[in-house]
Length: 312
Image (cartoon, rainbow, N blue to C red; front, side, top):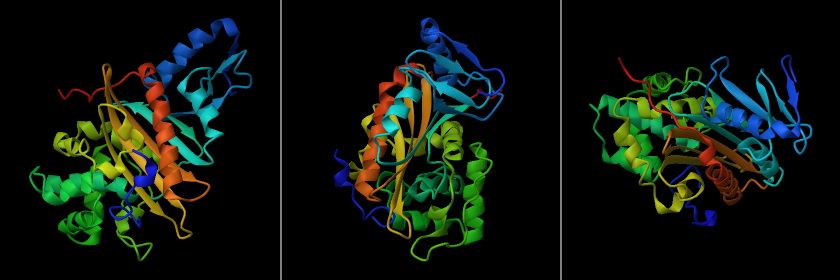
């Protein structure tokens, strides 16, 4: 589906110490090590890994024990660096196994308004208050990203302050310990919740624990039925549940966000993507998101999925 078919009406205003350098003959082994770091979340010494290109990716590999890992040839990180220079915009990509603690973040975009992606925890908050039942408003808010339905959900939670606390509680339950949902409007033309600042890494942490929440299966099932006009980005990947969101800033420049859960033979992988094209158009932003999704798809076999922790 071409990004130009996106419908506006249903969305918001349509080397530190410890560095080791090895020769080219050990690149393959080092690549395996980085792939383990990227996908398996095998170390829990820090929350995330930021990835940067190596000084000479063709002949050497640099691996660090700190928060920066060099991009090795042929890896997701290295290919992201190559792709980023062609995107004509700002972009961020974050990935981690479901149920894990460690993530990898790529790109120069880090935080911004949640837009319609916040409708997922909003619907979960109403679902919890509704004894786990799915209402028609939940369905259309998830599958069509319908704004009126989302407003119905928000109002069902009570006052703005009460609603914001309820949705924030869902974020905390899903291990996002930083984001606080807005209860007051920062722009008169949008409801407060879509303007909530949601950092890419905090959003990914929520997504990686989303399948582990009570009653999440019913909500995730709706994310398998997203409307035809939003079939871009992660929608192109098989076995993927996703939610998109987009909106323009006061200058008319669109931010496009999307997160998803990809089910693979080794488990589930959580992905969060954000893009803002230099042109500021919605179509250009969705095209960037699609290119990043295609990149994830290309390297999907390198990733190791995760599962929700067992409750004893």
